[in-house]
Amino acid sequence: MQDKVQKGPEKAFWIVYKTLQYFYPIAWKRYKAFFGVGIVKVIIYAVLPFVKIMMMPLIIDELLGARNFHRLVLYAAILVAGHTLLSLCGSFADVTLEKYQEKMDNFFSEEMGRRVMTLDFQLTEDKKALDQIEAARTGMEWYSGGVYGISMELFQGISNIITGAGVIFLIALYAPILFELNIALLIVSAIINSRNNAIEIETYGRMAKINRIFSYLAFNMMDFRYGKDIRLYHAKEMMVEKWEAYSNECRQYWKWQADKKLPLGIFKSISESVRGFGSYLYLGILTIMGKITVGTFSQMISAGNTFQYSLEGLIRNMQEIIKRSSYAYEYVKFMEYPAAIEKGERPVEDKTHTIVFRNVSFAYPGSNTSVLNDVNIQLNPGEHLSVVGLNGAGKTTFIKLLCRLYDPTEGEILLDDVNIKEYDYNQYMALFSPVFQDFKLFGFSIKENIVLDKNYSEEEVSGLIGQVGLSDKINSLLKGTDTILFKASDENGIEPSGGEQQKLAIARALFKKAPVVILDEPTAALDPVAEYDIYSHFDTLVGGKTAIYISHRLSSCRFCDKIAVFSEGRIKEYGTHNELIGIDGGIYAGMFAAQAQYYQ
Image (cartoon, rainbow, N blue to C red; front, side, top):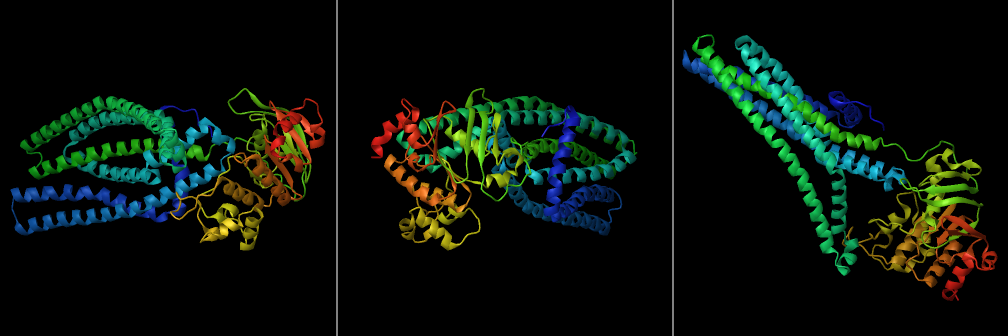
């Protein structure tokens, strides 16, 4: 999303407009009552100051004049009852509005979560995108107050406009110079508040990266999954030292902000004292000259203060709206973050597919070093391909491109002779069931980890569990497939072994029923014999589907129709096992000879 090239107030109000334009239609659609109560709040707080302003001069003049007891009681009753009733109604409106705060915060947090989970994968490894995610999160949760925080300033601002307009009439009627004194201070306050807000926004911008690192440290320090490494390698002190270092850096930012704001606060206090002295002196002279009564003197003091507070409050409300909108706008920018890869609309036909890599090269964003160089290969329907090579040869990158987690830097990938960029992205992604080497299971039930909220039958799940060899384990559990994984999620949860987790990941891949199944070294932590056993069993489960096995070990090669040997980002050798094993001095032949002892 490209911001317009604007500066100063124009840019600030443009940001407010874009922020409100994004949030308010959504909030209005879901929470109309919130705005209804907000209107009531506006009216109550606009009228509330006038109860005292109008009744106090009547009481004072009555005390200094006729001293009629019944009128005094009536005036006092109106003052107390009116102020009490409006205050209670205002409090009720505030409490009612607060009930919507968590609802709206949760809704927009959920929407952000949805956006994060559908963000192009390439952006999850992009520093700018990660910083934007953190800015959006902290901007909404910590700084802006979300829709609720912006709305409270807007409601109060409207109340201040109504109140200010009302007292202007009274001041102009009795003490017009008082109006000028308040306007002078108002200009000073506006300049000071504007500078304070600019300082706070600058501090926020400087701290976006620090906040992201803080979140990472806080997560790792309290996540039990890192417990073994932290204890066995005595990493506690390092973690705490890093936390303290970033804490000190944060404190420097806050100190800088406080130092910048201190002289502004002192100057504002002096200005307010000057206004107060001038107001009392001017009104006192009018009273001595007999131009206003003592009651009116009191009324003008109250009206002047109310006018000052209203207009100063209005400016503060406007500046707060601008500031809060600037923070919340980071959320808008993230929600409208541009796609990293091109997405077409062409439907994927329901048939078997041929996939071709044609002159494909790839370098990760921000890097000039190619990970893949001029890769050409064809994957036919039902073919089983083994991709082998040493670590760093480009095997996993090859799969990321195939699954459209990234797009090639050069060349193209074709599905049935059509560039994959032309296809509907979700339909294309549905073709693949990958099990990556860094696959993740969630702190949900065993069943949920397999089906991931898709339609299913108990018989189908049980069948898959049996096929991957987990029946005995799951049958031994009190809750069976409803057992929660990981004790961090449930005190009665289980901690499955590495092999059991791998089998659950394979069951998940099979449940998807995609026509192309990919195993990207999910068994790297196993010994070669155990890996061979899983691959031999899995090859039977895959059956006639297209399958890709990736490993720097060769246990899967015997089951495959073709083998692609990656080295230095290129396919250096390609053929069947018997063809490659016969190449004198070949890469595959050397790797197989080195590993053969594990499979004999």
